[in-house]
Length: 480
Ligand code: ADP
Image (cartoon, rainbow, N blue to C red):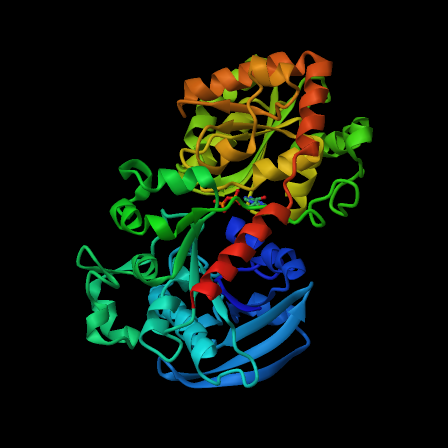
C-alpha cells in the first residue's frame, strides 16, 4: 500500500516538537505491514541543505503565482518528497516564525500551498509513475489537503487527519479565503468557515475520511468544551470517524544502550552507569556534586506545559533536597522566572535556554526524574523517553500522560507495575505533592530501582500503534 504523508516538519530534517518525531518514526514502523510511505514536506533551507542527493521528480506550474518543483530524496530511511518553492519556504527563521519570533504573515499561503501540492500529487500526474492509495495529513498545516482533494481529481481517495495538538488550528481572517484557490462553496460551515474566519484544521476535520489523535484519553478530552478549543461540537458529529492512537517513539534513536549523545551507555541491568551521565550534567548545569535526586524538564516554555506551575515550586524542590535542571525555549516571562530561580539557587537549579537535541538525550540519561506538569497533553513524548531511559516520569494526569505512565499508588507498587507518578488537579500544589511522593520513593532505593526497571520494560515502541494505523488504512481502503 502506498501512503502519502504530509507534514510541516519531520525528524531528523526539521523539528520544533513532537509532530516531527511522529512523522519521522511512523513510516519505518508501518513498513512491516507492507505500507510504503512517502513524506511530503516543505523545502525549507534546513531541509534542502541536508538533502545533498535529491532529484526533481515533478513540478507544479502555478502554485499561488509561482512555479514549484517536487524533489525526491532518501534520508535516514525516509522516502521524501520536498516541495521546493523559494518564494514560500526560503526564509531566514524557523518553519513558522521569523528571526524575531513572529509568525510569517503569509503562513496561510505557505501551508495552503503544501496542502494544494499534496492534493495534486495525490490526484494528478505531478510525480509520474507514483500515486498514493491513502493520504495521511498532520495538523493544521496540512489539513487543507482533504479539502483541496474534495474539489480536485483525488476526491475519492481516503484521507486521515491526525491532530497532534488541537490548540493550534490555523485560523485566519476571512480575507485570506479568495487567495486559497478554492471554489466559493468552500467558505461555508461544511468546509472552512469558522465563526466568520477561515479555519484550516476545521476544514480538514470536516472533510477527512478519518480523524485520529495521538492518545485514547486525548481523543475523549477533545470532545469536551474544556479541551476541544471550540471544535468539540464538530468532533462529536464525527465521533464514528475519530480514534485515539497513542504515539510510540523511535527506539533506535532513543536507546540508552547505543545513544551517541550520552556520556555513558547503559541498559536495564546496568543502571549504576547512569552516574557518569549525572556527572556531565552537574558540570554542564553548574550543580553542586551533592547527593539527592535531579529532576529535569525538557519542554517548550508555555502555559500549556505548566511551566508557570514549575516556576512556583522551584524553591520547594531545593528545600526538599532535590535539584532541578531545565532545557527549554518559549515564553520570555517564563524563561525569565526560571532563570531567576537558577540564580537564586546556584548549585541546585540550572537552566539552559534554547533548543538542544543532544543535551535533551543526556538529561534523560543522567537525571533521576522528568517533570511534565502539562495542563493538557495530546500524547507527550518526553515521558516516553524518560521511561526508556530510567528517568522516572512525574506527570499531570491528562491526555497521553494518563495513558502512558502508571502511577505509583500502593496497589500498583504492590503489583510491581508502577512506572511513575501522576497528579491531579494540575496546580502548583498538585505538582508539589507529586514531587514529595517521588522524593519518598527515591529515598527507598529498592522502590526507586523497581520504578526505573518497570519503566524501562514498558513497550514504548511503535509496534502496537503502527498496527492500529495499518488496520485503519486497510479499513478505509476496504470501504472504497
Ligand atoms: P510538543 O510537541 O507539544 O512540544 P512533545 O512532548 O510531544 O511536546 O514533544 C516534544 C519534543 O521536543 C520531544 O522530542 C522533546 O524531547 C523535544 N524538545 C522539547 N523542548 C526541547 C528543547 N528545548 N531542546 C531539545 N528538545 C526539546
